[in-house]
Length: 166
Image 1 (cartoon, rainbow, N blue to C red):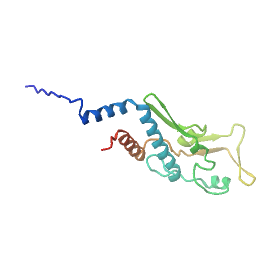
Image 2 (cartoon, rainbow, N blue to C red):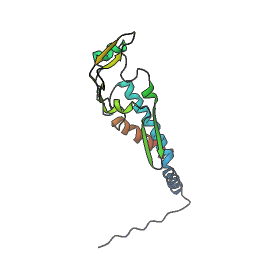
Image 3 (cartoon, helix red, strand yellow):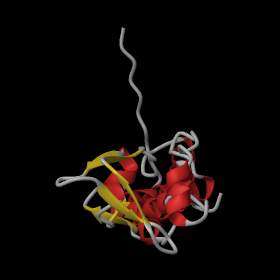
């Protein structure tokens, strides 16, 4: 047993015009990816405000020594704003890349342990003085990733992109 389906399209119909618009939009992938990049920059910026990773888990709080060195508690990862300000995206063909241009971005994303080569590390304190340690461990505080909020923002952006006013 076989089933045959024949489809005849009226090229002058409103449905075909909408289909043609959808196809045209689908062919402009780089424009869509730029819109997605902007949406993901917003969700990533929000993580700095919320101090949470892409999955919504709170970042590890500042250690007492870090607060002492800074001279105040303040927000995590935003002391100077360089890291957050370095976030950008790049579209190449059908690929979107998002991340920081700041060199220290990976340290905060993945964590790191820094050890002194020739003795203890010197950590200057705000207001003068210094503290010394053999090693310093910076915990991972992921800020780049693709979590539920990113998925929602991406879905909304794609839906808006293909919305033809219906």
